[in-house]
Image (cartoon, rainbow, N blue to C red):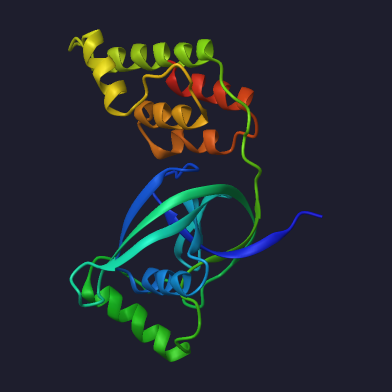
Length: 236
């Protein structure tokens, strides 16, 4: 029987892939609570792309497939506890089986960047009890990693697709081949021994929108991942 576990969920406007680093600045009260709870526990939470078609008690809903993030560093930004800077590293991807709603609904006209918005949430939290969780949680099942390799021929084919897409998008400007090679070099993507991480990085360079990357995270084998990457990098 597949084992499930409950983890905090952080919906974001991005896709986190396994083994990718993700720095975050935390300022909302609900996510400061999430980080505090993680630091007292195993340091793990789930990062999911925001599902723009739904909500959870007024808050941004997460896509079903996400990636576990491990907090590797946490520090105060201004030494006043109002903002935290955390560094995280992607681990396994997961699938949400059941959403556990937060204890509070999003207040009307809530502004996450304002002091007033933070006060609204904090006051609601005090009323219901500060032990209650303000953030979304979910019961999740871990997804096994793709452990297949990509051939050098396939990798070079993906690189050529990426180059063609960048050249096409830049028109009427002309992009010189050496400039594209320089970008690949900057991101350490010139290699004779490509791995799955190279595919993720190349795809991120070729994506215009985080939603373009979600299908790659949902791929279950190398063949499917390569096919979805080809679709992403092919000029429409």
